Length: 208
Figure 1: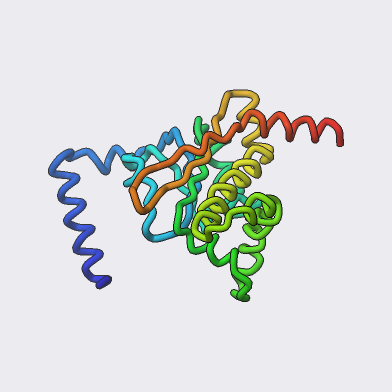
Figure 2: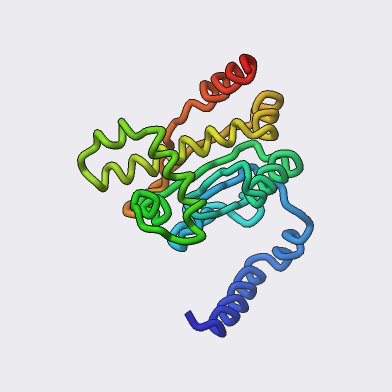
C-alpha cells in the first residue's frame, strides 16, 4: 500500500463522515463509553469493528499474536485493568480465528527467536489438552481444535485475573470465548461455561 494513499483515504473518510454528520468528530472527542472489551489476534485479516458491525466508541480493543492473556504481559494486563475498572465494560470477549499463524507456528518445532517465549504459552495449551488433540488425525481439524482450546484457556486466564473476577462476582461482568471463521466470515460462540471455571478457580483458591 502506498503510504501517501493512506492520507488521501483518510481525507475522503473525514469528508464522508462530516457529510453525514457535521458533529461526528466533535462528539467522538468528548470521550468513550464502550460496553465491550475485545481481545483478539493481531492478524491483518481480522478487524473487530467490521465483523461485529460496531461503531467507533462501542468496543475497546486489544490485539496481540494469537489473542493471548498472559499475567506477566503488562500490555494486556493494563488494558484489562483499564477496561474493567475504569471504563466499566460489561463484556470481555476473547476472539480467536481459524487459520491463525501464531497457533500454527506453536504447533511446529522450529525456533522463532523472540517469538519463542510467547509461543510457549500456546504450546502449554497443547500440553494441557494433548490426549484430546493427539486423538484428532486430521491435521487441519486438530489445528482448529487447538485454536478453540486456546480461546478457552485464555478465558480461564481472564477469570483468574483479580480485576475480572471481582467484577464478575460483584457486578455480573460477562466473559465470552469466540472464534472467527475467516473462510465464512461468521463469528462462532464457543459457549464456554465461565461460571463453572470461576467456581472451580474459587474452590482451588479456598483450598490453598
